Image: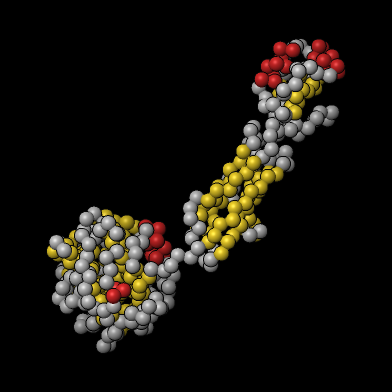
Length: 369
């Protein structure tokens, strides 16, 4: 029978107290000992058939007359963050549990600064909008009622806004970014309803409207993101300028225009700018802009001169080596420029002095007004 104990001792971690049922008689031992048992256990073992009928599961409740089952080692818990803690962002936290042979049935409880939040082995938490330290805590309970917890204190940081100008066109042409880049126009017209909203107003651009933002150094950019909602109304072929930062009649720092010269029912977005090597232009979307439909457009020029464009938050075109744009002292014009004048509605024009990531573009697209 000693050989049976040797077999069992070899298959369980030292330092644990484990109970086995051998032919209906309970015997116990501790790993790392001499291998001897109590007299009663030895008698019971001698009456047994010498075979192990069954092993008590680690998470099984103790039967009458049987000792409680204990696990090999205590639980250990670590909380790990999967991303930087930027205010308002969603960060995934993982609760890593250690402790040797663990029951499969573990329960998790998460909290942020003491307030409970949902989560299992991982938790996706929306961080607060303001700066400051927060405490993320995970508590794990196993099927035996043992508990262990760990917490992590992280600083939540507010990223400095790189928004240069924002024109919501809610009844005026003022810059809502707070940077003072207000647009001027002789006779602006507005129509009810924002893009994607039940109420509000958007700029209605008709010939010969001229919406002009006076030149400012902050609007002359070599890395940038431009986003806007458009709703064209003309059906004829041709090109229509959406936005342009250039001297009159030139393409300058950046010019975006629609093109439907191929007769397609949808218009494509085109991009063009001046570089040291000369004028550079490229297709920024493969169609996707339809008459009498609101469409959200985003064009991102990255620091390595890669152009990335999006339609309704979805990435459509990526073009490398488009050249570094030349800056200029021309005014910023909305709705008209070197490729004709736009006719239709324009809403929520935003200019950023940074290359927005894909997730940021989606956030802008989904943002309420």
